[in-house]
Length: 157
Ligand SMILES: Cc1cc2nc3c(=O)[nH]c(=O)nc-3n(C[C@H](O)[C@H](O)[C@H](O)COP(=O)(O)O)c2cc1C
Image 1: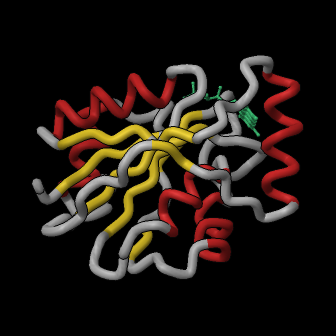
Image 2 (image 1 turned 45 degrees about the vertical axis):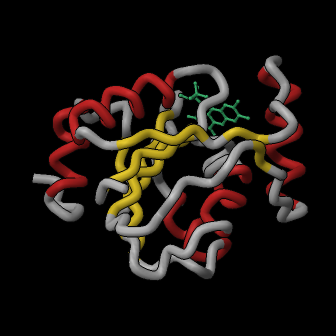
């Protein structure tokens, strides 16, 4: 296992593309977080599902094996902003891992809201986060800048 893993959830492909670019820059392995039940393709329906999952503190089941984390030092974690926080399948993923010794670098795509407030929700929801860096705005940073941010331990410049 390499020291850096790029993991992502993406419903419509924006975060997937960024995660793939970042994995190349970092020469890291990549892992897709896959909910067992796919989210609705229609956006309004998906917003309703996302709201319900958040309100009820649901952790939707995932499919596929979890990544190997032995020797892992940094987890770059990409996801879209959903109703000002992260999709709950991302929490399922985080809670399934032992992150006590792993730094987490969230990067977020959105249609404008950015990553504001997402760290607070992650900290509150996931009690197993060892070191959570301030989430980066994936729409406003180049893949090279994101890569440097992860490599330099969370320093933005
Ligand atoms: C359920 C849902 C909720 C969303 N909520 C927000 C939001 O609160 N603010 C925002 O700027 N964009 C919001 N978006 C837009 C997505 O964050 C944006 O399109 C993202 O880049 C999609 O990433 P993906 O293609 O990797 O799924 C929402 C999209 C969905 C489906």
